Image: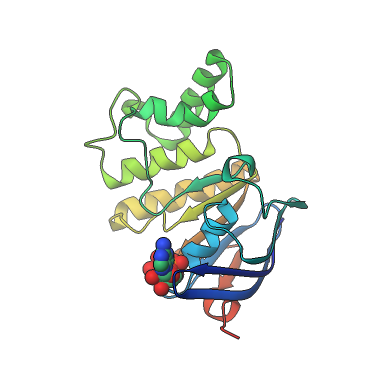
Length: 211
Ligand SMILES: Nc1ncnc2c1ncn2[C@@H]1O[C@H](COP(=O)(O)OP(=O)(O)OP(=O)(O)O)[C@@H](O)[C@H]1O
């Protein structure tokens, strides 16, 4: 369960106040709303990249509000994927496992499994530069999934993709959600994505109403 209680945050002159929302374990929640309403800010606050001014964020009953991002144990795919351009595809996928001190044999097995599931096995020896938008998104998803987080945060994961790639990514996200029991929180402006993927629909306009 992701539980956000009376969350207040500031981004420059923009402020959200008293946001409450709950996402049950194993749900695929889609947070939808117009541009600039604060969806990314809330996601970044859950990820630990933006501080909460007030309120709390609980994940699986644990209060993570004041924890640094690295201690929250969440998979996070930012809006632009933010892959490490100086590392290859393999190293991007391995990153979260290596910093956790995972044995190389386990890293290798996990990356092989992930690359197969994500359809990127042929890209493992490539660098990041030159990957297409869809390939980047798959690698970004793999990097976030590598350590098997209980919660995945996705910021507009399909925005940069053409229609065919978007459809393929939607199918992939459905498969990953069904296969892992992970709780997803996916931010988008697209009603079509929400219709296709959401088991829980969250309307940012209602949830973030200024008081
Ligand atoms: N680092 C920042 N400094 C100042 N203002 C910011 C910062 N980050 C975000 N904002 C402002 O906060 C508001 C909410 O931005 P946010 O990115 O959370 O919205 P969003 O709903 O995710 O938008 P989009 O759908 O376009 O990504 C916007 O007015 C934005 O300009």
